[in-house]
Image 1 (cartoon, rainbow, N blue to C red):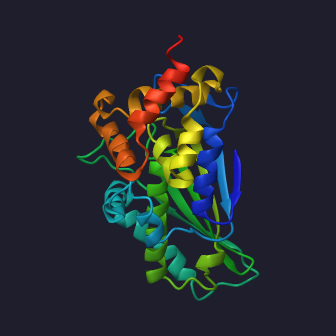
Image 2 (image 1 turned 45 degrees about the vertical axis):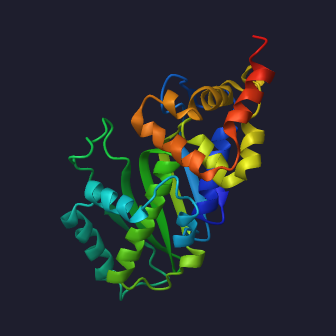
Length: 278
């Protein structure tokens, strides 16, 4: 899947919408799993930088209440200081010798260490490396991920990478660097979307009415992927007492805090229209 957008925020919105609208023949559908829809590979290609700032993150509080804490967590997981400083030193060694006739690239590698809060995934760390590319007298950025949940986790990774770029810029003079026209290629080898996070994504990007319109449908007539999303939303998600895993209850809680729809009324109407005659 290839997504082209003006910045990483728009790419994030677009790739999530693409997953929501995937047909049954695309990717893998695992209804009984948290990571319900899986697809490979994904490439996001943007020409206008990150597109996220503090105001953007503040408008999306349901994913991370505190992005500084998320950055600290990812730093603890992924940054090996010796390895990281070695990569920065390579860029710094060339900072005064950057020529339009000499394309270069510099890798900054992540190292996923086991921490008290979480074990290393069986496949290794999700974030693998950043590559700073000097090409045609401009800097470009290539980000590689082994795997990613593309809604909440991907947003956290974008915030983390943006913070790391600022850290590199504070240590190295990056000739002709331009945040507003930075070209970024962001590759995800294996991408997934979780049915328990989709409602919050829809709420933030489409509003109450758009969310209600998208989810108010008959699962029997939906594509099998979205039928699973619809069924989970109406019969489980909006009833916090039915969400048995505490870590998943946070998505319902944040959704209900941000919405103005009376979902009890909407649920009764949905059941009357699509369930009473079963």
